[in-house]
Length: 85
Image (cartoon, rainbow, N blue to C red; front, side, top):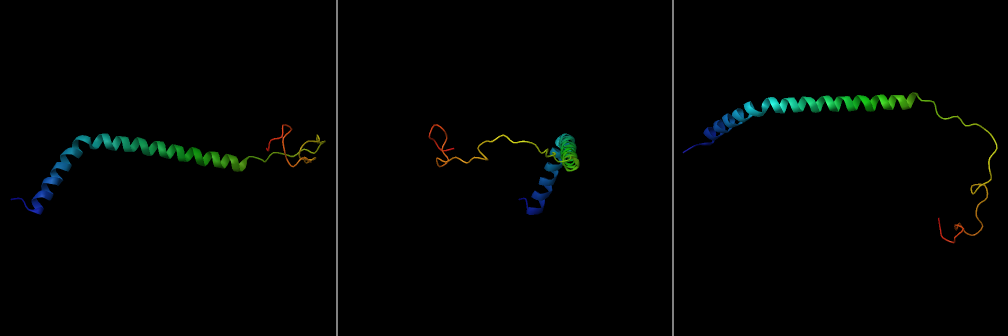
């Protein structure tokens, strides 16, 4: 009967045979995935750097048009049709 060491050797041989057939394909796919991941990480870093170097929008003083913010509603915050916002 087979012992534990014989079964381990058979298992290693079977894995080696399967890996010999599918190994190049697996390595190729892993390489493609690594390149895609690296490109996406680089793009995210460049976008973050671009946002950091962009100047914030300027506030230009001028006249304001009276609206809801300047004149709070006196009816408890209801819309003109009587519903809550």
